[in-house]
Length: 96
Figure (spheres, rainbow, N blue to C red):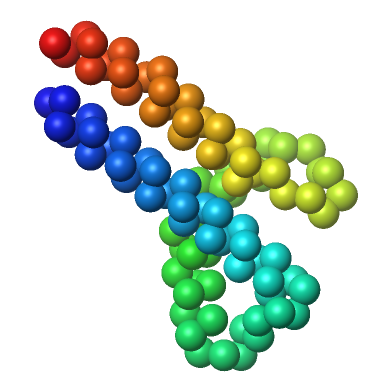
Protein backbone atom coordinates (compact mmCIF):
# COMPACT_ATOMS: atom_id res chain seq x y z
CA UNK A 1 0.00 0.00 0.00
CA UNK A 2 2.92 2.35 0.67
CA UNK A 3 4.08 1.85 -2.92
CA UNK A 4 0.62 2.93 -4.06
CA UNK A 5 0.90 6.12 -1.99
CA UNK A 6 4.31 6.75 -3.57
CA UNK A 7 2.72 6.31 -6.99
CA UNK A 8 -0.01 8.81 -6.10
CA UNK A 9 2.65 11.27 -4.95
CA UNK A 10 4.48 10.84 -8.26
CA UNK A 11 1.27 11.45 -10.20
CA UNK A 12 0.60 14.59 -8.18
CA UNK A 13 4.12 15.85 -8.92
CA UNK A 14 3.57 15.19 -12.62
CA UNK A 15 0.31 17.15 -12.45
CA UNK A 16 2.15 20.11 -10.89
CA UNK A 17 4.51 20.10 -13.88
CA UNK A 18 1.53 19.96 -16.24
CA UNK A 19 -0.06 22.94 -14.46
CA UNK A 20 3.16 24.93 -14.78
CA UNK A 21 3.47 24.04 -18.46
CA UNK A 22 -0.12 25.11 -19.06
CA UNK A 23 0.43 28.45 -17.33
CA UNK A 24 3.65 29.13 -19.25
CA UNK A 25 2.03 28.21 -22.57
CA UNK A 26 -0.91 30.51 -21.84
CA UNK A 27 1.54 33.37 -21.18
CA UNK A 28 3.43 32.61 -24.39
CA UNK A 29 0.18 32.65 -26.35
CA UNK A 30 -1.02 35.85 -24.64
CA UNK A 31 2.22 37.69 -25.50
CA UNK A 32 2.24 36.33 -29.09
CA UNK A 33 5.51 34.47 -28.62
CA UNK A 34 3.96 31.31 -30.05
CA UNK A 35 1.23 31.14 -32.63
CA UNK A 36 -1.81 28.94 -32.05
CA UNK A 37 -2.17 28.46 -35.80
CA UNK A 38 0.87 26.22 -35.58
CA UNK A 39 -0.49 22.68 -35.38
CA UNK A 40 2.00 21.46 -32.74
CA UNK A 41 1.26 24.41 -30.46
CA UNK A 42 -2.45 23.92 -30.99
CA UNK A 43 -2.31 20.22 -30.11
CA UNK A 44 -0.16 20.80 -27.02
CA UNK A 45 -2.36 23.68 -25.89
CA UNK A 46 -5.54 21.66 -26.34
CA UNK A 47 -4.06 18.71 -24.42
CA UNK A 48 -2.96 20.92 -21.52
CA UNK A 49 -6.33 22.67 -21.48
CA UNK A 50 -8.25 19.39 -21.34
CA UNK A 51 -6.04 18.02 -18.57
CA UNK A 52 -6.03 21.11 -16.33
CA UNK A 53 -9.39 22.77 -16.91
CA UNK A 54 -11.56 20.24 -14.98
CA UNK A 55 -9.53 20.98 -11.85
CA UNK A 56 -9.13 24.72 -12.38
CA UNK A 57 -12.72 25.54 -13.39
CA UNK A 58 -14.33 24.99 -9.93
CA UNK A 59 -11.63 27.12 -8.29
CA UNK A 60 -12.10 29.91 -10.84
CA UNK A 61 -15.83 29.83 -10.16
CA UNK A 62 -15.30 30.41 -6.43
CA UNK A 63 -12.45 32.93 -6.71
CA UNK A 64 -13.24 36.64 -6.89
CA UNK A 65 -12.28 38.55 -10.03
CA UNK A 66 -8.70 39.77 -9.69
CA UNK A 67 -8.62 41.86 -12.84
CA UNK A 68 -7.28 39.36 -15.33
CA UNK A 69 -4.86 37.61 -12.97
CA UNK A 70 -5.55 33.90 -12.65
CA UNK A 71 -4.15 32.43 -9.45
CA UNK A 72 -6.11 29.18 -9.63
CA UNK A 73 -3.03 27.15 -10.72
CA UNK A 74 -1.16 28.45 -7.67
CA UNK A 75 -4.01 27.37 -5.41
CA UNK A 76 -4.09 23.89 -6.97
CA UNK A 77 -0.31 23.56 -6.60
CA UNK A 78 -0.54 24.57 -2.92
CA UNK A 79 -3.30 21.99 -2.37
CA UNK A 80 -1.18 19.32 -4.06
CA UNK A 81 1.82 20.20 -1.88
CA UNK A 82 -0.43 19.98 1.19
CA UNK A 83 -1.64 16.54 0.11
CA UNK A 84 1.93 15.37 -0.51
CA UNK A 85 3.40 16.74 2.70
CA UNK A 86 0.56 16.17 5.20
CA UNK A 87 -2.07 13.73 4.01
CA UNK A 88 0.01 11.07 2.24
CA UNK A 89 2.62 10.70 5.06
CA UNK A 90 -0.15 10.44 7.65
CA UNK A 91 -1.88 7.77 5.55
CA UNK A 92 1.42 5.91 5.25
CA UNK A 93 1.92 6.03 9.03
CA UNK A 94 -1.65 4.84 9.61
CA UNK A 95 -1.15 1.86 7.31
CA UNK A 96 2.10 0.68 8.89
